[in-house]
Length: 141
Figure 1 (cartoon, rainbow, N blue to C red):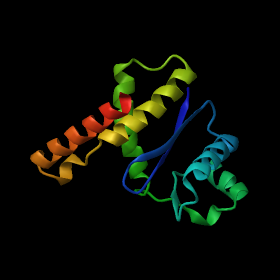
Figure 2 (figure 1 turned 90 degrees about the vertical axis):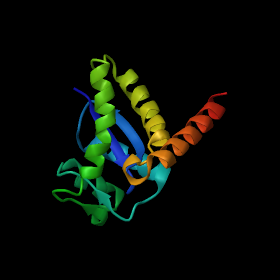
Figure 3 (figure 1 turned 135 degrees about the horizontal axis):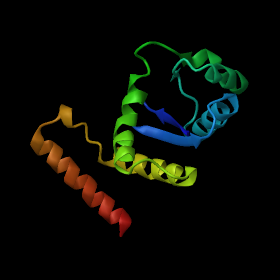
């Protein structure tokens, strides 16, 4: 059993992903410290009800920024869906190293090509998708 920790911004883009064997205070502390070092302190941090979060946030000194609620965590939970779909197609992961590598790569690719399809017309969506693909190909060349 492995645990995938994810930091998601207010628009649903995945900022950070981290894989651990345990889901305890030290794992939460490492994840939060890594995310805050890279992205800075957030105004609010929405988490699930896991009790290792407040313990880790107390050590970091930002326990007052934590919010927990029934539907507040939906953005993070929904960001798991494309990852889980791909994981199921691959018939799970065999090693933690490959899981971490896949999670970081999948995140960057998904963030790049995610175009909020439901908010724009088909023509605009196709133009944005083509532009994202052209940019991706120029980065890979």
